[in-house]
Image (cartoon, rainbow over all chains, first blue to last red; front, side, top):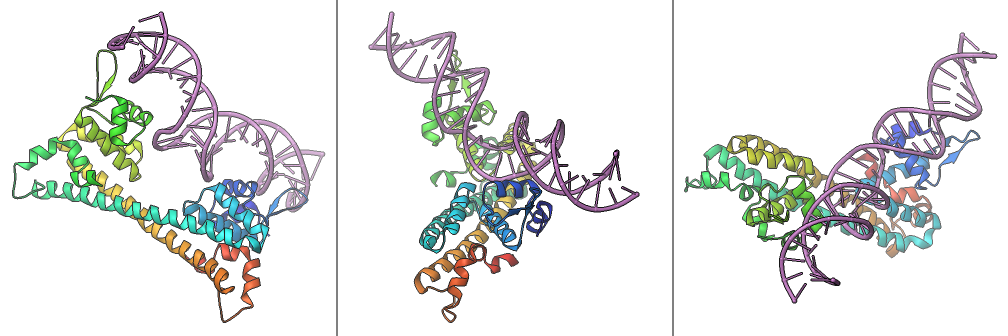
Length: 149
Length: 149
DNA sequence: TAGAGCCTTCGTGTTACACGAAGTCAAGCT
DNA sequence: AGCTTGACTTCGTGTAACACGAAGGCTCTA
């Protein structure tokens, strides 16, 4: 049996977060002793790990709550849990694709700056570009190739 | 010259956001007419696009502000702008990696549920697993392979 | 003269906590 | 008995980036 402090250390959450989660009902197995102190057994710790995991992957607390409640309802809710997870997976995938696009864009951006810094022109065949580009801040800032996207 | 409403339509931002950004100084080229009305020229629209872009990629408004200010300071700040962008790119890359991990984890999770739904056991060679797994909610919720990570 | 459209400031709500303060317990040690 | 500790509670503020609405004022136009 662990206290809030220990649970926090084990899971890497803050004590605040641990209390927050338990108070929201995301750790169903947590108990209180006669002094009203939260006691976490191994299952509670697992729940905390799980909540942390889902939260990190971008699932809102409300949805996590729904999921936990479904778990508590028993095996009959497995299809609903599956659906919920699938939907969340789709969202995570969408975010992944977005992240890829962002990185690609920033690669472009930094490459442009690198060209300017190293070759003093983004287009080495046209040195006249330099001043032009440096003064068209919003073009360096927001290149044409992105505008299409 | 465009009004707030038009600028919002063109950029896909809300009017609220457009006013917010201009008030924060993220759209340096914006002007006011004699009736105190914001007027956006093409450069302003470009800035709005750029701000939107950076914001979407996860850059905080404060940092965008810094970047804009550097742009306004002139060509001498190009190295600093480059550094800023590189740092932001690194962050975006880190987020990308995180997103990949999340998706991988959720693939596992949904696959597990799919097994349960289709074969009635995650390990078909051991049917006895079924009840066990269904009752160890936190194990379905948070599988051992993830704990290692 | 009324309405439309712009402006302003103000204030609340959102998400998931962080952080601190204040005040209350109970247990253990000296 | 008293002190320290560690846990608990509620309260309130702050964060980021707006969303949304209200109130009130301005100007232009039909």
